[in-house]
Length: 114
Length: 112
Image (cartoon, rainbow over all chains, first blue to last red; front, side, top):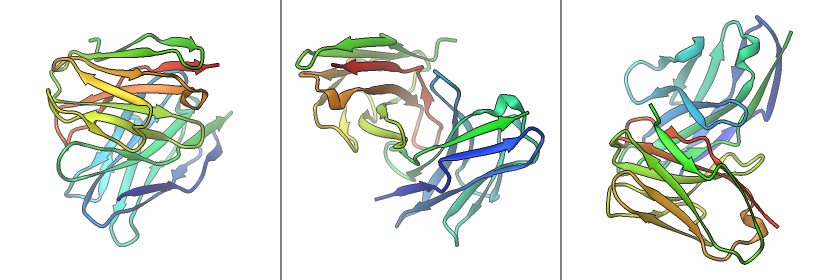
């Protein structure tokens, strides 16, 4: 079975500062990795995904993530955040076969202070 | 550009009542999913349908049933609602196992 741990439940940062949201996963088989964002009272939207190839993945809104197989991590980064990035962020994994049964982390609430 | 549509958006039930949550997607996706979201626990998969005509249990199926009515629609039924089922329910769909899921805006369900 797969599991996902998001190491920080809340991350406060100042506007224009860099941010890193941490995600570690556990799996005995190869996985696909995703980051989703949830704005208040909305569903989840895909930020980026890692399926294969380059370990540095670029997504929407200036976010990027790096897949590190040896450390089983998929941390999300942005060099300069904006007030509009205030949201909850979820890391998720799925196995590389069958239906895409996503296993989500607990979520990290990112708060941007002016 | 409707994507995934969930109805209703809000609902309050009494313990023991039954209810069906509706979900429809217009993207011709093969797979559909039902999740529940609880504070501090992320999203947990209740049931999924890999393709039309098939359904399977996810991580937390107890107390729920599903129906894949056709390729577009996937409903979630609570036969006898319990306070522990108070949650936000999300429906999602995807084209295939390596494509991202598209989510609806959720149904906020309270059971008293």
